[in-house]
Amino acid sequence: MTAKLSVSLPVHKDVLLHLRVPKTVKLTELDHLPHGLLERPATALHHSLDGPTLIHLEGRNPQPLFISVLQHGNEVTGWEAVRRLMKSHYEFDQLPRSLSILIGNTRAAKQGLRRLDDQLDFNRCWPNGKYPDSEPGKLFQQVTHQMRARAPIASIDIHNNTGLNPHYAAINRVRPRFLRLASYFSSKVVYFTMPEGTQSRAFSEFCPSLTLECGQAGEVHGTDHSIGFLETCMHLEEIPAAPMDANDVHLFHMVATVRIPDDVLFGFGRVPTEIAFRENLDVLNFQELPAGVSFGDVRGGPSKPLVVTDTNGVDVTDLYFRFDRDQLETKREIMPSMLTQDRRVIQQDCLCYLMERVHFEDVAEITDHDPLPEGIHRSDRPGEPAL
Image 1 (tube, one colour):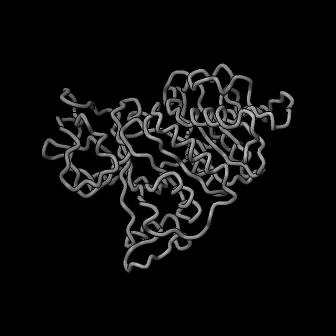
Image 2 (image 1 turned 120 degrees about the horizontal axis):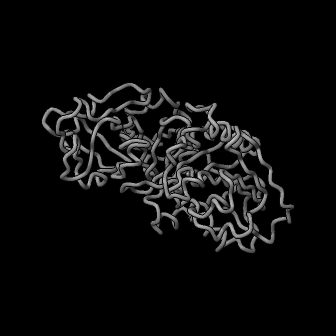
Image 3 (image 1 turned 135 degrees about the vertical axis):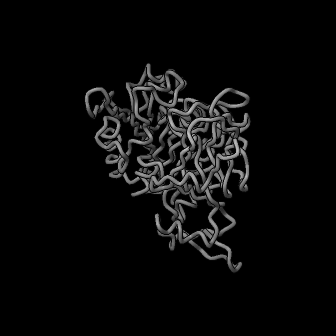
């Protein structure tokens, strides 16, 4: 997934630094808020901003907080939180901490879409992803280089879901400061290593980095929750590095991605398609489902109307689903997240992710991706994890 025009900020010249990354994409870097920017909703930002824009604002504490919004153009909660926060609290007062704010896909935001058909997904184009030589890939390498040099206290990337999901924070490294920061937003924390090329994963190499999932776009609660969290971060002197206890967070590990092949016809409810998903599919998000739960009806089509891949890209469909009883059924205990009924999002991204709760006996599995020792703190109760 801004700042305030504060009278306490030094007066800046109207200087734009355009870092040109191939021809049609450029990064605009500002040291102030353009006049009237905070009055514009996401759909109107294109009138003021010519594509991705990185805005640096000075505060009492010079170590910045990095905030990323609108990596997906239809996920507007981050921008709404930033502009409301700046307008209501810091119109005249100095920021407690410097901010670096990245405003992402203004072209898609104009149309109210995740991304346009001629665009890559911005949140798959950051360093260590699959698109380093793409225009957005080079642009986000510039942003990463810039921010690494500024040593932010933390990185916050704000997103929305299109399905019914609780608010939760996602991390790419299981470390005390990452977990502590995530716990300030939600007790539900998801550890993920896929998909590749995300902003939070790129920044996790040099600062605590979170992805916030703030429910559906347009919900006031999501904006209010984000504002409160950003306020907390702006007033932190530091993020405590002490290990956390098990009951402070509920940690889940993202283990697989579920996609629908392009040639499979699908719909929701009683429709004549190869997969007819249940109408209320997204109510299953963050539910620990047993084997035998039906996602919907299967009516002809390929033998595997879904494809499930693990964190290494290996096809593990047969571990999780069966299709032989005219039903799309779970084959083992699973917990889905980000199930959606938005066809465009499903086609551009995926149907959902599958997660597993992290218990003490699961720690070795996660250690394969991200060593845990400094983030794990044994509780007083034998056999219970403390994260």
